[in-house]
Image (tube, rainbow, N blue to C red):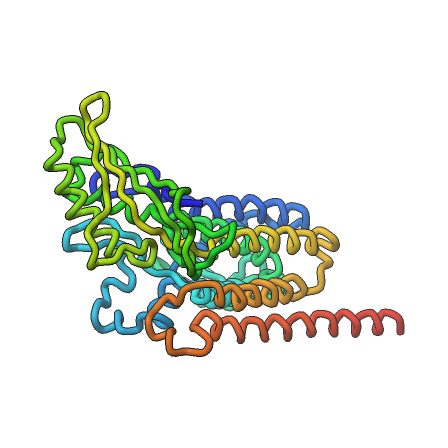
Length: 404
């Protein structure tokens, strides 16, 4: 398969709505509805879901961004501190989003945020209030505070930390599936080259650059197809034809100039997606269509790779149904930590395995036996084993106690 779909839904000036952003947001919206159902079924207040959603959105974005910078680009803290948290580029000014999010950072962020949620309450006060009377015996705060944000220790027993995690990880798996699908649209987190039926040549980043380059006002559209007349090469090397259709009024000289300069430049720039030797001239044919416009066929080689993003996305969907089934069996009587432990073991074990099929994200990982993603997965897997064993042990102890 050749992937040449646009990563953008639409653009307006410097702002573009990308599939990644839509799928990221859709993950939280769908998750919220599923959590509403879970909380209704268990007889818990649905308003808690709204609070949890806020915690989750903030924890995921902040944790994933800081995780990427800490684990992969720590130099940004002193070379571009604004860029660590800013979704804008200033030279020229444009909305770029947060370039670089790490799922391990998001995981640590969520674990911390839900610990805060389970143990503390955040109160917002805009008027004089007397908080010496604890509302619903749930908080213990100082009296007569106003115009502030007050973090207070929960004193009324509610859902435990593990019970909250058990419900949240169900929807985290589904959100993860949608985020990885967004990575596929962006042609990022790509797999290693492979000659296999499921391999994909990612070409849309090149098309996006060609259509947005200032000189590309000459181009109407670009399509890509496999050249079936030539055999595949080793290490995923696939012969492809790039068809460039020029706009009306573009003469042959300008068309050739675009091919020799712009097309050749971007094929060389995105060497992870195509194999276009810099020392050789561009191989192309140009012709005039019946309507008087020009079209060209460029011959080069794409690099077919493991669609690692789809592997992880499909795995997360399967994990979602498994976790939801575990919850559905006992619902509110599910032993605390049971679902969370299964989630940690399966998700991060799969992540550890998939890393063998993926390209390293940063150069320093090339010298490591295990890359950063695998190293960070190990403590999460071990935590999952501990939590799951503890869950079964406590269940067995409770059964023995009831029997006695």
